[in-house]
Image (cartoon, rainbow, N blue to C red; front, top):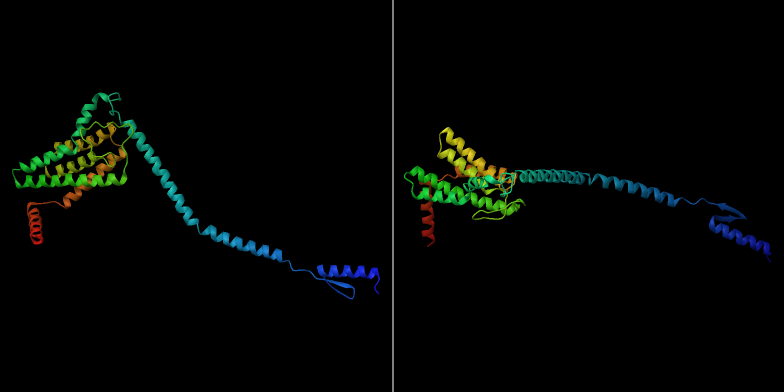
Length: 271
């Protein structure tokens, strides 16, 4: 029968052998357990470092694009702020109490000279009372150019939807819309000036007067506070593009006759 001391030693040897290793003839074989946690931690660390390297390299292009977009946005807003500030400083005839409010009626007269109503009336009158084929051709193309200018300006204004300056006070007899970009007066003045210089005016003093009139019409919109500086500048460039388009689509009497005959033949065929 085993003694209590041997039982204690046996229990101790069993407990120790269960923790560290096995006992052989009362001696313990202490085995060293493999460092699984350290290996797992190192492998996870390497995997995380590799994944982070890929994660850093992948969105670098996206970060560059976002940075470029942010820089462009900042530059655009800076230019827009300069435009608004300069437009407000130049609106010296926006009301009677402005810096140059005393010459407001004269500036408004220049502005009205670039309105669409006088030009449409003049084109129709010249078209009806033309004495020669050349005058008829010129007035017909001028009328087409005015209608084309109105349509394209309305399309651009509907897309951009830029409001007029906050300090504006519109007292025109008729208002086409409530947007200011581009300035319709500036586009019309530039287009009509180019057509006049190309087909109606040949002397140097009159050519200089026509160019000065187109510039004063655009300037009057800024002085009256009706448009911003960029509205007028873009409108002048757009007016020149309209003139180039009209020159490409120029209607001579023979071409107009062919178009009318083709239209009548198609109408008769449809009936």
